[in-house]
Amino acid sequence: MKNRIIISFFFIVFIGFQYQVKAQFTSEELAEREKWEEFLKTAKIIGQKQQESREAVTNPWELTLEKNGVTRKALWKNAEGRMRGFIENWRWEIAAYRLDKYLGLNMISPTVEKKFRGERGSCQLWADYWIKARHKNEQEIKVPSYKVLYYNRANYLRWAFDNLIANEDRHSGNIFITKDWRIILPDHSRCFRTSNKFTKKLIYTEKHKEGPKIMKELPRAFVEKLKSLNFELIRDIVGEYLTEKEIDAVLLRRDLILEAIDERIKKLGEDKVLY
Image (cartoon, rainbow, N blue to C red; front, side, top):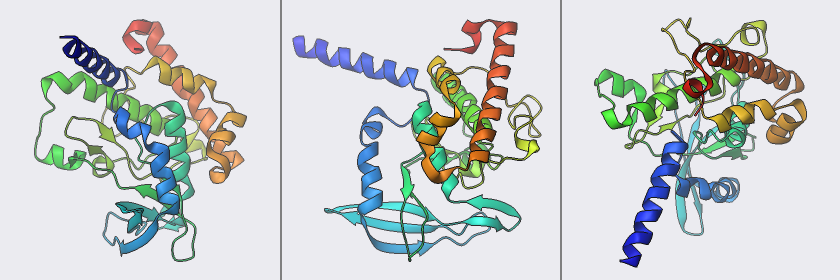
């Protein structure tokens, strides 16, 4: 009887944790994040295959890594500069991951710098997922009723993060969905823009070209982390992977996000906007 009570207690705690940290990696995966970062940096490359398709503008490499009998796949990029009309930078992959960690978003798979074929680049642990949002939409797969709130809040959080990092390249092909309706976000080599287009207004709002994309509800902890950001802190978080101008642009967008949140709170009340 005692064991049954203990098991029930941990089950309740686990469910509560999942409810609180919408759309993140599981607690077990988060606990091993630093381990996988070290793995990516130090594992031996035993296989390599370059992606070449219309969608893979940066032509990343699929690497097979091995260390101490453990084998995992990873995605390596060294894109930098203008490619097929788009400005790309592998450093932004690492900066996005580091900000994801600090903000408690936890939607991005471990990403580090790794040399491959004598060149620097980003190396991201291959994420396991069930389906891409594009295929979900094409197949008209509906979110289970008991997951709708969970899934919607994941998208609000995703829009807030992409607003912060100026990611206008998020599309249904680079949104991964797990079997239990968590969201994993790959592909951040086209972020951290600094022009007026990306610092005077947010990308994801009620006026988005694809229809309203509103940050309706956000975790209080996430918003408090946003408020804590300043130049020195961001520099500590991202290291060399963002320039001073790029950091300044992040802060400008942070202010726009907080203004939008404040407006919703004044209109609807704090309990309707933050949880």
